[in-house]
Amino acid sequence: MQIRDLPYSDPGVPDARSGPRFLLWLGRNQLGGQLKSLAWGLLHFGSIAGLPYMVGIAVEAVLDRSGTRLALAGAVIVILGIAVALGDTMLHRTAVTNWITAAARVQQLLARKTALLGAALTRRVAAGEVVAVSTGDVEKIGWFVEALSRFAAAAFTVVLVTVGLLVYQPALGVVVAVGIPLLAIAVLPLLPRATRRADFQREKAGRATELASDTVAGLRVLRGIGGEELFLDRYRRASQEVRTAAVRSARMWATISAIQVLMPGLLMIAVVWHGVHLAREGRITVGELVTVYSAVMMLNYPLRHFEEIAMAYSFSRPSAKRAARVLSLERTTRSADEEAPGTGATSDKGTERLDEGVEHPSTPPAGDLYDPATGLLAPAGRLTAVVCGDPDEAGRLAERLGGHPAFDGAADLPSVRLGDVPLDGLPLAAARTAVLVQDKDPVLLSGTLSTLLDVPASGAVSAAEALSAAQCSDVLDALAQTSVDDDPMAAHLTERGRSLSGGQRQRLALARSLVTDPEALVLDEPTSAVDSHTEARVADGIRELRRGRTTVVLTSSPLILDRAERVVFLDDGEVAAVGEHRELVHSQPRYRAVVTRETDDERVTVDTLTNLDIEETA
Image 1: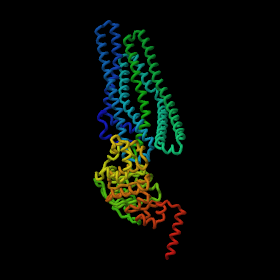
Image 2: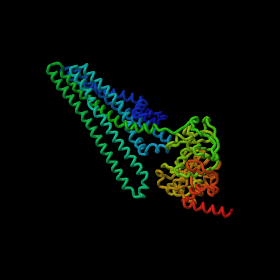
Image 3: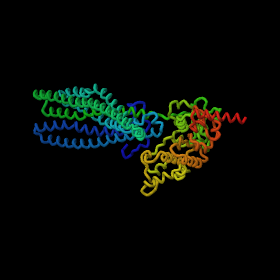
Image 4: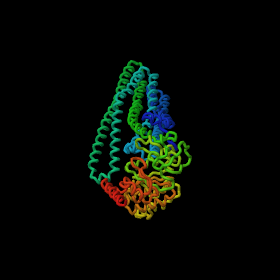
């Protein structure tokens, strides 16, 4: 895999059972790049390892006054120098390729998981942690993947040089053979502590990132309540904790680096001291001493990669653990034969029986939208308004109707059905094509208005029709003033549409949902941020544009309820009444209290007056 070939057509299915397993899976998928990097690394380190031997031969040639041997040694040294440069260049190229392709694979996996879970992701994992994984953690994981092949080449070279010295000059080679393993294991006792400190630093950094993310997202609210200084002090404390943890971690790694410098120095002293004695006794030549000395000097370079791989693994392991945690999250699904007892049973609230065990169609299903957990039935082709006694229930119901609930206990509830098909058992793409859910707080991505409305759609609804139905004329006028050529569709929207008012953002999000023209559209409080006059026009626009299509609006607005073809009232998680708005206002006190925001005292007064009117009439 080359950088120019990115992105991956399929990043694969990761082993997310743990951080080390994820790193192992990633390494296996990068095997081709690792082997290339290993080959160039062997050329690079092997050429460096050959230089001391050629230097020793050159010294011997000078002492023996052999010009031929000296010229031959010089030619080989030149060739080895070229090989060192070529190997280093290609090693760096392939190693960086491994780094970038591994990071890109992880980012694609995270993006795919984010698209799969949607809004459910941030309910299971903090938004700051997701940001930390997709930025800094990806870099740490890529670093370990990149360093792995270089470490393998360095380790192989160290073994090769050690064995070569044993064969070349056993008397000094034994000293090197004993000293090299001691150098390799000298830092092992310190690695667990260094790893723990690195983990602690990453944990503190993740918490600080979460705090910063939450603070930025809620900055407008913080300014409204004067809480900027409070949260600034919290972030200062969090950042100081990160600094302290980073300093403690750096001290440990500095100690490891010092040992990596001290131990080879001691080995060098031992080799020189022992070699001088052997040379004075005539047991070795000066050229052999120079060769062994140069070889030990050369070993300092590959031995540095032992420290790097330890550091890379220590930093990448917690990063891989966090990435594996996100990638292990799954969408809540349920096949038809796993439905909880009671699915499809006839409800005493006026719902209909739906058969179970129907095979999933290859095309998006159609029909009535039915929730057996609450008894809610939204007939196909009609505008159904749903009023919930508990405001939090509306959000949970919207998630269930979309076929991807994320709240606790969702897996124990029977699946929502569209027609005869359970949505939880459908592939996510098919479920989202069939049912589109617009959250209470929809997000507008940065870009032009035309880009915002360029979404997968049936093509039956144009952008102009959707904008008109959502009553976006004033929004278009405002955007036209910011556009260079007075074209509102070319106007640039800032991140999350922050340059627009809440009502304007809400209506643009509604237009985006209307453009898709799904089989069933679920809107959670689509007009909560607009005035009553605009709300009435939006309700008329939704009803007209969605005529003949299944539409569910979760709301308590009388203006929308009065225009709905069917109103369903949910109380304590179950359907309590079904009818038209005007009828339910007079016949259902609890419904009237929710819609008109009556207090308990006002409801008692209204009920008393109603009973008196009934008695007087009788």
